[in-house]
Image (tube, rainbow, N blue to C red; front, side, top):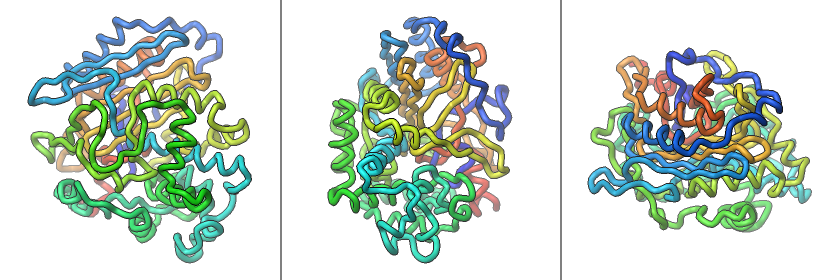
Length: 431
């Protein structure tokens, strides 16, 4: 996420590949070029994933699809103390990848005629966003992050504002009501006028969950489970009940750029702080299947899927365009084709899912050491060899080559603090 003043992160392009503020995008490949990509090289994928572990990642696990060919792999450890290995089908907290599921549920309401994307939030949830802002912010602005509402995360975990991680431990078992999260976000400094610009905020998707509850008359997580997760045929995907992941999973280690040394396990955590913005647990094969069902029209009618794929420019603090964001999904334009996906991060866990529009070329990747780069005194990070190893794996999985590797930038699309510019926006980081 690289430039958002809230919790966010993902794999980053190496400094040699792209300048810090430059978008990691390339022209899309022609259909003919995309059609001639070689089939999945299982040995190359296995070697590339092992290289992620060798570079310093505790454990990494992935599911890759190339047409009718699928590959699942894992490298490294789920528990650094016992040496228990990771396996390809382990469950993972997927963070902001959850946002696509919330967006789908609301777009189902649009298809049913119960919701207007262009209507103000105040029509459905009067008073939730006070004053004129509630009348100017539309549902679409929530879903594409152009509402201008600030993020609540630095207020839910206030010690982060002084570069202390004590809030992470103090709030491990704290249950936070979604309306309290919205209150924090609405009271935060606005990031812009409604509709003015893209600015990633988890508050938008907590409001989206409350809106879904209002329209359906039921718990939004339960609605999403029945009408999105189960409808997509996902068998190992769920909103957790309580602080524990119920299926086989790794320990989830948080480093926070070296502020937590050694990294601490946060796999047991009350995820009410993320809710409909990022609390879902899933597996990598399930994530591939979800995106395949979504992009091929099995979860939404064509008109609503087109709305989901209508993008706005993602911009950094300097106004430079770093990508394109739709409604809960992000578009990647690379030399080997156009892809859709999202990243997700919570304390101790980071995940990516990326898919071609036809669902035939896909990659879901997770790892269990978060924010492994080191934060310097000037608020910049020292790139880690892990970054390059992850980018190499992604290039092999999606483009079947390391030539012209797409590289991934953390560009405001998940939940846990990322890179230098995140901290330059904080008063404590300026002192």
